[in-house]
Length: 380
Ligand SMILES: Cc1ncc(COP(=O)(O)O)c(C=O)c1O
Image (cartoon, rainbow, N blue to C red; front, side, top):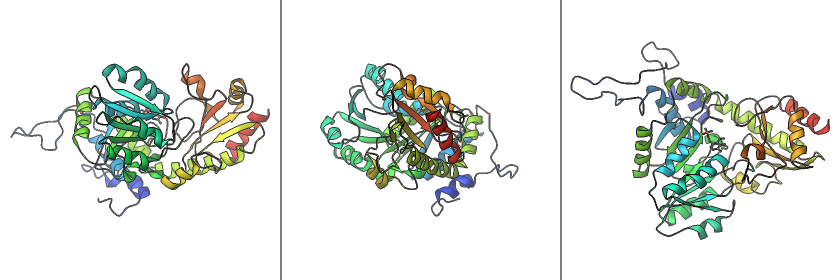
């Protein structure tokens, strides 16, 4: 089935038309086989050899993701982190990368603590400062620009097209962590990026029950081949059941993301007015620093993630989280249920996160219930 004429909603709901061809079941089966038989002529008729790289259950989600991101190819990984790390592992010792200061903290830690040991140097630049990116370029040595937008947990917006131009002018590649925006609200490849990364654990799956990651490329080049080789030799892939579950989650992503985005906007507009709130950080708010840029490069909403800084500091924020009844106090994001987290507590030493900040993953519940819950926690 061609996806040329279909909207994202249709691609997702129909899963590009994949079926259980053997029984004509409308949902493909789960294929646990780790190995695939050769034909008598010694070939592999359907191209699959061994499940460390090949499994029928990867194909549908990979094709759907490539269609949503308008890319040439996609690869699933066992986690968002393994997908991100593979992009850097495909570099060579001595190569240089540029990354904004505030990004998902675990990946920042990996860059600080592991990538440098393998000879990959990273310059961290101030978020939202394209001139700082230009100034950080080392001609001939800078091979990768990496950004995350909106950036977890303060949701700074990076100008993808401007970063892509800097990469292009300097013979480097741009990779974008598009986890928070999802392919429904932003398509970095269309803005000039070369690779898009997702923690599929979040909105793609949407039910807080699968750990997964994904990469999508604009063109299948040597860097992409290298990443495929890294995945094939390391085997950082999903089990077939998890890949199947991920696809099941993806089929409802359009309605989930739409609801979470409109909830997050209404929630942040309401909470911004509360006297016990210092600041609401949400790209959809006119008061947010990156709002105009977010409007330019996102469409259909600003996503379900926001943060609230509570007047009175860290303990006041932790106390508010303790009094919430509907929100679950847990890390992660992108599920149908709303979560709250005192972010500095989970990031620990070296965190760049303000200590009065609660990170909220807004789910698809009634927004009135969510607002009422947060206000009772602030006021009780
Ligand atoms: C923006 C972002 N990127 C990457 C990751 C890592 O993904 P995973 O937990 O699937 O490894 C996360 C996890 O929270 C994230 O929020």
